[in-house]
Length: 388
Image (cartoon, rainbow, N blue to C red; front, side, top):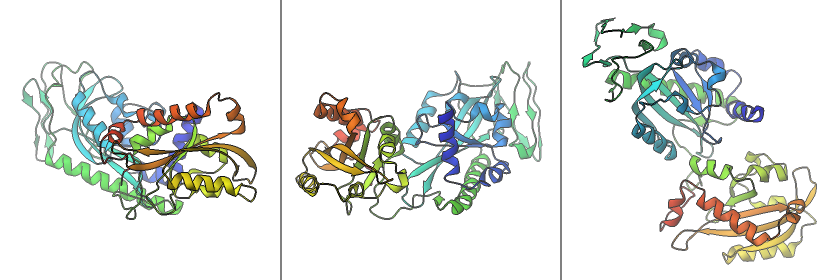
C-alpha cells in the first residue's frame, strides 16, 4: 500500500512543482485530478472545496477511484458515458447523481477533461469538476428556483434545502434520509452551471500549465504533439501495465523505429527511467561486447517482418552487462498489416525458470492482445492499437 501511495505522490510531483498543491487549493472550485496510467485510475489530488462538499477526508479519497462517490441510484448509463469518454481521451459534461460520505445523494454537473503532455501528446491526468445542480432540484414534483440574488427555501415533509456559502460551490444539502429527492429522473444543469464548470476547467488547466513549466514537463489542455508522433491510449497503457513481463513495444512506421511503450519490469531490469527509454531505438542497450552477428540477425528479421529469438549481451544504465533472451514478434491487424513490434526480454536468471521460451513469449503476446480493452481494434481491418 505504501508503494502504491508513493506512486500516486510521484504522479503529481513529477508533473508539477511543489507549489502547485497550494495554488490548486486556493481555487474555490470542487474538483479532483486522476491518473489514468496507474492501475485503478486513482485520485491523486482533491481540492479543499471538494472534500468539504463530499464530507470525505483527504486520506479517504487519495488513491481511490471516483466510483466511491456513486451509489445505488447512480445512473449506470451515465457512468458508462464517463468511462467511454476516458477511454477515448475526450472531455465530457454530464449530470450525475453522487453520494456524500454520510449517504446523502445530490445531483451535480460532472465535467471531465484530459490533461496532455505537451511534448508527446500523451494523456497524463484527468481533471474532474463537480458543480452541484441547485436551480432545478426537484422535491416530489416541486422545483426549487433561484429568484434574484436570494434563494427560496421550500420545505416538504422532512426535506429542507440549505444553502451554503457562494465561495464553497453553493452546496445543496438534504436530510440524511433524503426523502423527496427525485433520484430517478435526470436533473439537468442550467446554462449558468455549465458555463461555471467550463470556466473552472480552464482555471485549473491554467494553474497546472503554469506549475508544470518548472519541471520541464509542460502540460496543456489540448493535444499538441508533433505530426506523426505515436500515441498509446491510456486504456491500453493500463492494460499493458498489468503485464509483469519485461518488454517494450516499438513502431516500425516511424523513423528509427522508436520505443513507444516500456514495461515496469523492463525498466527495473535495465535501470533506466521511462522518459530515458521512450522515443529511442533499442540499440542503446548494446555495447562494445555485443555480438554484431546477433544484431544483424535482428535487423534481418525486422526487415522480413518475422519473429526471432536470440541470446544477446546487453548493457544496463550503470554499464553492467547481462545476457538477454530477446524475442521479437510482429503485431498485425486482421488484414496482416504490421502495426508494431513486441520485444520480450528475459535475464539469464529468468531464462532458466522458463521451460519453453517460445511458448512463454507466445502466451505473453496473447495476453497483451486479449487482455486489452481495445482488443477489438486489433481484429478490425485497418485498425491499430497504436493510435495516430
